Length: 516
Image (cartoon, rainbow, N blue to C red; front, side, top):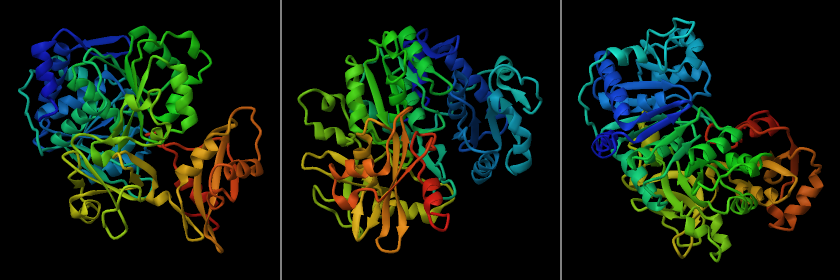
């Protein structure tokens, strides 16, 4: 199981078929193989030996995908840098993983000189795309290297060999480098394809960032199936609608905030989206009103939810399309589905004891998709993987039919007056108000109750709502102790690259001491 295997398979079976579409460029699998093996030769000449890290900094593009596979072809390990990080966070990732070589697209060349000053490890910078623009910040450009290079044989590293160090967002502390092997990623994507079946003649559209495990996962899934994929630098709803229609895209991955923006775009109805057969959604919970609207406005589209995290490569459970069909229990849409074929999932209590169906506890998982640990963090690795199970930090339960329900993150659970309040349940209640665009529920310190439930809400344009109305609405849907005691209205909420609402800044702002 090596991640470059689909390239070899494509050369035998579909060499002239389209592999990548980006802007006005189309690349066949045969061309793709050449654009992987040639830069791999240059990486090898630069000293990329087995296990050597190579960083990539850029927006989604065909060049980015080529860089991923070139690194693996050379025998290296990818370190996909979060394009939204500041220069200090990027330098930390380079130094923590001892990454010497950086592949960077032209948009990020202006930060290279600062990076050279901050990072002790960085030694070589290569520019992706054509030329180095108006700056000489890069040492060379990949296009020039491709033109001059002689292809090399695939290193064919696989199995338990390290393939990627994926740094987590670091919203609760220093970023952690999640170590994923070829086997983790290969089996993880194969299992996701089995859990949410799709035809082999699909055309994928990937707006999720490739530095995030969700975007990388979709690219790997499409490569495994030898399907063409369209790369866009970021999510833009107008561009998405146009590309689905023009390229007859049949599947995509969206986080709920993306799905909401897509179906609410003012020109949504003007586009022929009949080719869109499947929307994979995940990375954050979806509220029921949004899913209902999506099912109505995209009647020819099936939906499947994928649940997981970077440490799980990333999918551990899937809610397949048949669960979204008419006649199925509506309450099941609140679940994240059943464990994928290669995963075993349990619910455990604080002591680690197995809990029966219906009991709420921490979600733990085991299987070949589980990470080998965190880079250079043996104690945190041992804690996360204690007993041979990955402790996800998510709180949930399994029902009698084996469907998994995620009710909160452990760190997001609110303890008010001795009662556990799961923020996702309160957020789902508030999301049913038509005036609400987005909301986040957190706990704020309280001398009497320990913590109080507090809602932070973004209203739709032109909508009017006050705190009393929100609280009264919640009291009609959930227990009184779960209802917000305070409500704030803001113009926007900060999102992580995965589309998740960042709650740490909210806690810091609302804490009496100004910190979480």
